[in-house]
Each structure stands twice: as structure tokens, then as C-alpha cells.
Length: 113
Image 1 (tube, rainbow, N blue to C red):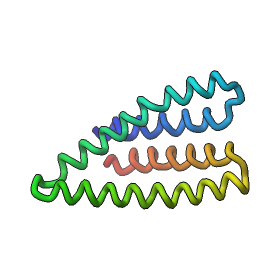
Image 2: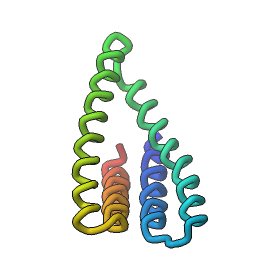
Image 3: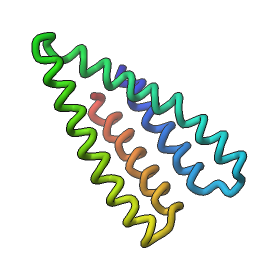
């Protein structure tokens, strides 16, 4: 399962970077479609790992807490990324996202989840 998370994150990062620098609309569309399966690979593996590691009795609370944290992080990232897009341009935001995803994949590989 850790391999799926790491591979999905790394591939999402690579494709995100490519999406940010591509100038051909059709290529951007194809890259957008290509990101989806790798993103789902890592998300499904992370959700499965969470479900397998939590006890059945506390699983609803764990999933609710995860949903709350995910929503808060999403809101903060929208604010931060929109600021960065205004300051540096949209391509820089995609490059930053790719670097963060790559760093997450390397960290995951190092600690092997």
C-alpha cells in the first residue's frame, strides 16, 4: 500500500509540473486526464490505510476528524496558492505544487509509511 501512495504522489507531482509548463491546450487536457488515475491511486491507498489502522469503534470519529482537517488545509491552500498566483503567476503555483508533491513522495519513500 505504501508503494501505491508513494508512486501515486510522485506521478501526480511530475504530471502537475508538466501541466504547469505546457503551452498546448490539447496537451494540457491530456495531462489533466492523466493526473486523475495517479491521484486516485494515492488517495484510495491512503484511505484504505487509515481504515485498516483505526479501530472499528472509533473509525467514524477518525474519518470525521480527517474530513475536517482536509477541509481546513484545502481552505488554507486555496488562500496561499491564490496569493502566489497573483504574485508569481499560475505556472509558478503549479511548479510549487509539483515540488511539494515530489517532496512528499521522497519523504514517504524515506520513512516507508
